[in-house]
Image 1: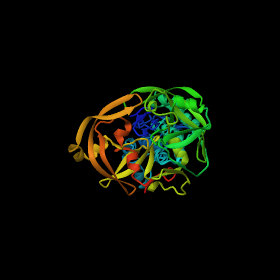
Image 2 (image 1 turned 45 degrees about the vertical axis):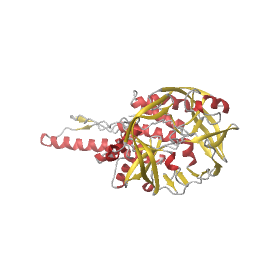
Image 3 (image 1 turned 60 degrees about the vertical axis):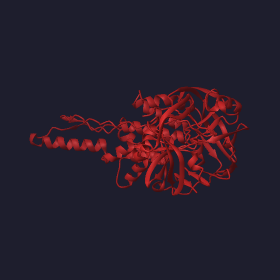
Length: 466
């Protein structure tokens, strides 16, 4: 599994894979050993005051029945409705959020899985409610650890810095050596003193420029690409200074696809303006000026607009005529129809190939769509006849890596019924990240720009290509 880190991958033509600051990582749920039952049992409901001790002195011929009854009561008190289909855990462990959503429709499930799906489909208030039950009923369980981790991801995506930091702190109380939380804590600690991100304005339209989305901070103009793969917005140190931002010290390292670690810091813009929209308190990771990809870019384009800002838009559309429209917010939300979800802080989309549903990481910062080992495993006949190479090039903030891959000449996909064709598609034959272990690929801008109009709706959780 991944650790709590950021990954920045360079792609040409001003598109980049972004910072991956992922808080959702799956750990196997530990089995809880039965409580010992003696002559005196204390029923304790985790997180609440213990119920009075209940003496179990009974007649010898009824003792066995009393112990069995006691065990049944203990199971009921401790585990409640934790009679989930084992398949649910498998779906959860393998990040199959769409399948888990569909399985929950078929019957009852524990509050833990209901909360996980609520967060995955961007319903943070329902997620809070369901996880509150987990915290009350089993506050020191492995499910509680994962619930804290999932909520931290949801809050960070919403720009709720204080709440995200509090969830990581709560996680570390339960699991003090958790590597993911320990590596991510400095980022959130640095942001915890900042007000939460907020947006003012509901609707505006701007014209995209060559380097992306035009905006301003403190009256200074810039153009950054909008990157759903960047789990925080990113800029170079010189850009932060150009905007007049205060750079905050934070013991944060950015890890790229090559495993190289680069020190970064934090800055927060009091206000970022795009057309008539104002976003307050926008967090940025600050990278050194000599690191790719920004060392090759001109001033005013050395950065990325990351996921928390894009989610704050709620809905945005970009068109072939280069117009970029923010809002208006959609009026409906039907999770059963959603083809977008979150895996931690990274959006996923469900599309089809050969009439089979496949889950892809959704990365508007990637120029090219890459396929991952799960795709190769699902379609081995394609790989057998493909051209192989050990020099598939990927560039990151720490340098370049050449990977083993196969190249497929042409593939036809369907995104919400919209047909799209990819040519000369690279298929990685070995995993390099958590995403490449669980998902069929990383969907880039080459597929999305085949549409005349592309709409992201983070309320309805839909991606629409027309």
